[in-house]
Image (cartoon, rainbow, N blue to C red):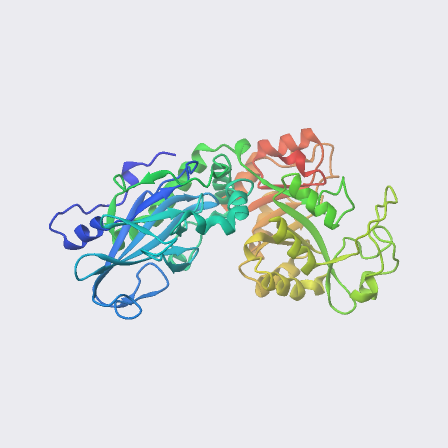
Length: 489
């Protein structure tokens, strides 16, 4: 997407503006990965002549200790990227400390919400080129480092972010812009996911692309700050206009894992789902007699385990001896019924999202506690067919996306949408796989557009029929579950 000149921030190019001259003189030079698809679009600046809170970053800038002695000014740079490889918009910062002689004495830079000393002039630290620091940019993610070696410990995560996880987060949300950005609706997530998924790349970790900022508009921070929400709105509208429904990158949700290849709700099924390019695993959660959240679909043990009786009649310890079993082949796994904690830990290891179907209304608090304990708020959707369960969960975790599961027969989508709004759920989830030979034809593009216009989304039943999957793609739904997640690619 090209940069519209009408959407660019105002610039200050007055040679008599002392702050602008100082900021331009010490503007950092950025070294980018040779495969990096994105460059900074604009830079905001603010010059501190005395200590004080940053206007754009959660910190206080100190001109005295621990800053260098005789520091006359600190220049704060806010680098704006339209795109991080995982989400729409990125704001990273650098702080250049200028001594009384005009020489750069110290450099700090941001890294995922924190800031670090760039060790100017020390081994493995940032270098100066004339009056300008040289900083390295993490591939796709744009956090700053003093040296390429700074990114080596995160190589695996960076490769995943730039590849299979590209676009996952949709529109980024930060406290700085709380309530001022366009809503991160399902449609916004889908078009951003599509745009970035099409630009995924394999980082080289060779940083030989230099960007010295000749093309970056520079503006005082307040002017850039006022422009940013307009820029995000502009980009979203462009994507919504140009990316037609059939092209949108939907969520690929592995139903109880890759459950056609492995025993459902097993570690093997979950790991295979990642190999089959799923974005999320769908799991079912119930409570044991002693209040532990466990992952099993049925109320009883007979179909999927070597045990018998109701799940709620067994403690967690009593479940341990039972093995998971394939109801069709009789295959018995070495795995026992997993706890929700174990599944969330595995999902983090495999870098998978988790779609939780709440099978036991009493499990709401335990599920909320597990999500909080694992920091999984951004990577989970919680669904239920019981609207009271959704209301209770919303009270426990208001920042987690929820989904209402609806069976067939069902009233018109317009009526379902009203009920969805009442419980503040984000997704409507029709469970209509057995309602017709072509359940996709029970929905229309007008239905999907109506749901999207309300800021909501549609995730559909588990589906393994190629013609139905093709029909769902034409509709532009936001996600599909499947026992064979490779069919959703």
